[in-house]
Image 1 (cartoon, helix red, strand yellow):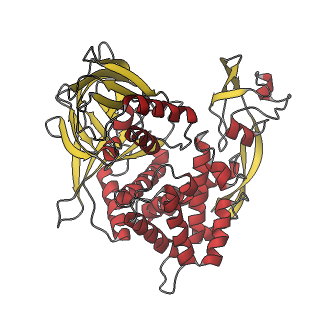
Image 2: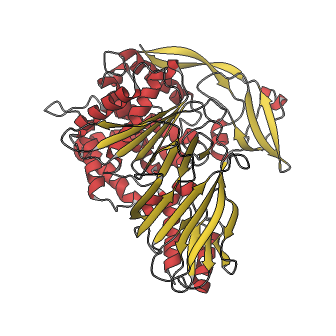
Image 3: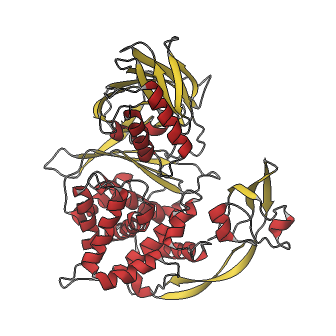
Length: 561
């Protein structure tokens, strides 16, 4: 009776970045548990069959799931984000929604009968960013947790037999992803938890292999999708140089087969640069081609590889709000450092990257918020998470000059100790992982010195940065920037998405913005000038567009020279 409750709570905790459990959701699960008494044993297989009809549904893929009911005729499935035409083949089967919020459905039919579900999963992804589904003639990107109906067992760690049949997709397609695919078919046994973190990419591209260790068969698979002639070197050269450098840093040749997909994305209002994402043994990096941002692309690739290289050994549980300054900020420090040390960047690129981040940091409307205040609003806007990354990277930069008696950088000793401990304690909770991180800093820096840095992380004063923090004999000088000047409380706006303290003489007011309006979308920029800004508000429960040209103000921001 309790198994379904346990499964639903664990599933939600594993599949979402928000741990706020609603009473309403809990009641749904309890009701379903009490009435339908889900049995103790796990479902043992899931077979998926994919087909595509571009003429009738160009952004949809048809999926059939086959699994089995238990000896009482029950099965529970988790419905993904976007599903059309959800049909159960057995017309006598009864469906019950037991958790509306998380889309958990109980199916009842004859004991031990096969359950067959058919549905469409539809996504429109004009930017072709490999961060959400793409279903098009030449490219398919399938993220398991967001596109597949998932049957649930009693435990996330239960072993399942998964089959993914892609034989009805175009015969000329190549396939790469979290699991090996042969003859357009994936056949693997893995835990439910691992499977939900997987993804598959299929399309008209060539997949290649990189052998980093001649003594073993371990390989890195990679694919480049789109045009990459704007790169100075072949993409394999970048991947090989960065992975070799990181392998030397970790002094660790043990890694699983890993796949990297570099995809050309298109410039749109929702995609304006570089986006990376990790899955089980699979990393995607979407980049909008721009020769001027080549250095940023290299650093982003290095950043994501740093995550990937140790990811299978030391997995940080999501969300990581409380230690985002370390998980993302220190990773960005190493991403930049390794890109420079491996010879893929010059000092000019290194300086330019830092200067861009300095403008982002000092122009941020929430730079005075404490770490605790920022972490509670990560779901409101990406700017909160971005500031934690920036602040963490700058603190790592300040620590980089600290060395022990053997001239070893203390930041390296701390980072390696943290990942070793996380690896040793694979089942540690988010809270325990945070304690591991904090304890490593305290052990190596000493309590007094660590307290100084920890206060910089937790508190709201601006960081005091100098040229010495960035090494290479760099100096820091003030520079005047003309940046947007918004005439309402920006920190309140970012936290609560409502307008407060609006100046009635402002361009925003003249365009129709009013005190107290609820904002549902926006494209505000802070670190660069904008020709126009769009704010979408709710007025009488109807969306209204507010378009205006923001005024500019001079802001003095330190820059490296």
